[in-house]
Length: 161
View 1 (tube, rainbow, N blue to C red):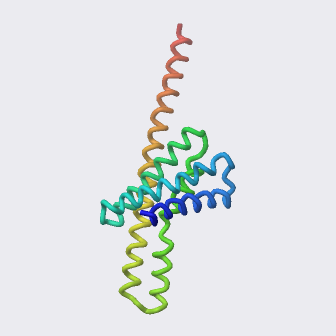
View 2: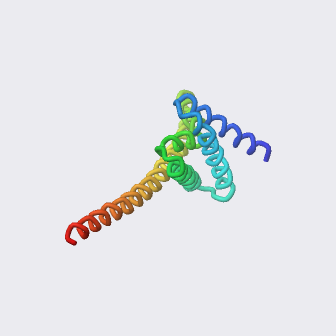
View 3: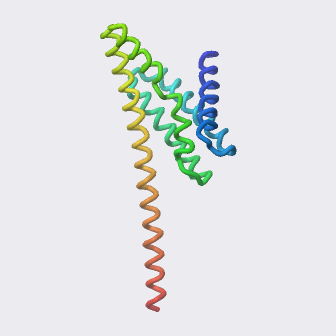
C-alpha cells in the first residue's frame, strides 16, 4: 500500500516535471501532474483485477486520454497539453532497458519476453489514445456540422422571407 502511494506521488512529480521541461503554462502544471497521478492510480487498480498486460494498459491509456480531453474542454486548450504528461507513468522504460540488457547478455528467452511485454504495452497505449481521440474528434465534427447546418438554414430562411 505504501509503495503504491509512493508510485502515485512519483508519477505526479514526473508528470509535473515533464510539464516544466516542455514549457507547459504554469496554470496547467498542477493539472498535468494530476493526470500522471490519475493514470498511475488507474494502472495500479487495473493491474490488481486484470492479468492481461495489453488490456490493463489499454484501459489506463483510455482513462489518461479521457482525462486529457475533459481538461482540454474545460480549460480551452489542446488535449496534448494534458495527454503527454499523463502518459508518462505508462511508458515502459524498464521493459525497454531490460530488453536491451538481455540482448547484450545473449539471454534470448528473457529478451523476447521483455520485448513482447514492451510491444503489448506500447500497442495498448496507442490503441487507447486512438479510440478516445477518434471518438472526441467525431463528436466535435458532428456537433460542429450541426451548428453550421443550422446557421445556414436559419440564414437562408431569413433571406427568403
